Length: 68
Image 1: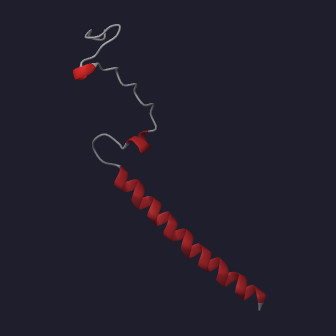
Image 2 (image 1 turned 90 degrees about the horizontal axis):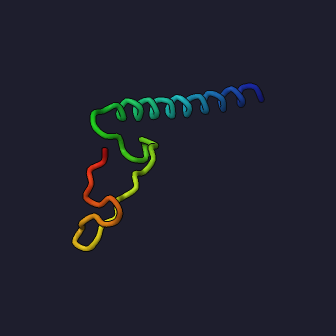
Image 3 (image 1 turned 120 degrees about the vertical axis):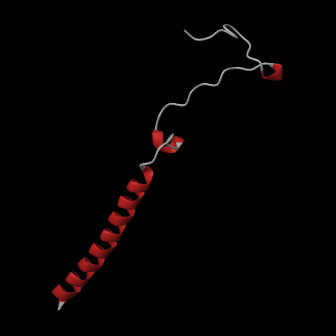
């Protein structure tokens, strides 16, 4: 019975898909929390670091000025 074999295989794949869906739903629920999201999850641009001189003090044009 070829049909029985196909049905058994499809049920097996359905079980694996159900497990994958449950895992993704649990992951989605665990992500909803307070605070800053991880960098890999936020997908935002990385901010450029300011240049620092010796001793950790900023140098270059506009050094020490507060942004407007």
